[in-house]
Image 1 (spheres, rainbow, N blue to C red):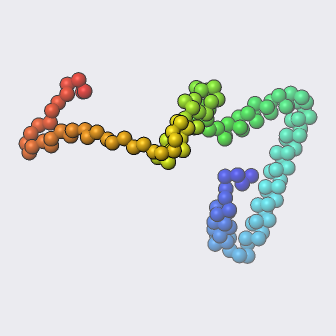
Image 2 (cartoon, rainbow, N blue to C red):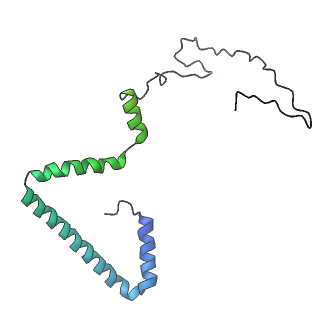
Image 3 (cartoon, rainbow, N blue to C red):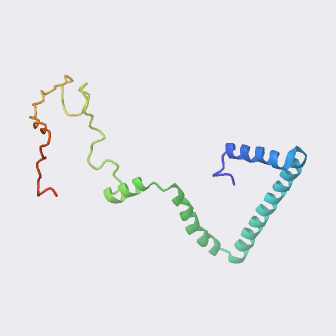
Length: 141
């Protein structure tokens, strides 16, 4: 019943009830609420049992799609798309077994000594002079 209501919310409701009803009427209100919830639960159980008796085995056939819909609450879209696109393969490119670290612990056949290649310097364009218009690339727009 309290799937989406946490203990913090219940505490706030109790404190608000204490201020609104006062300490004299709060126990009576809590008992009334408990009786009402119990009565509603009994009505729901009775209706379910009556429906099960009247429908017989068809009740389970009706209940199965409802349970499937209830299972959609825990739907993970990323997992569903991955499963659909890659036939359930969570690592379609095979990258989970490959480690690219400088300690040489990767699965690339290295001997354990990291090799760092010197980076070649890419020439940077000169900054624009004050008042100079930037170049325009007509193909880029």
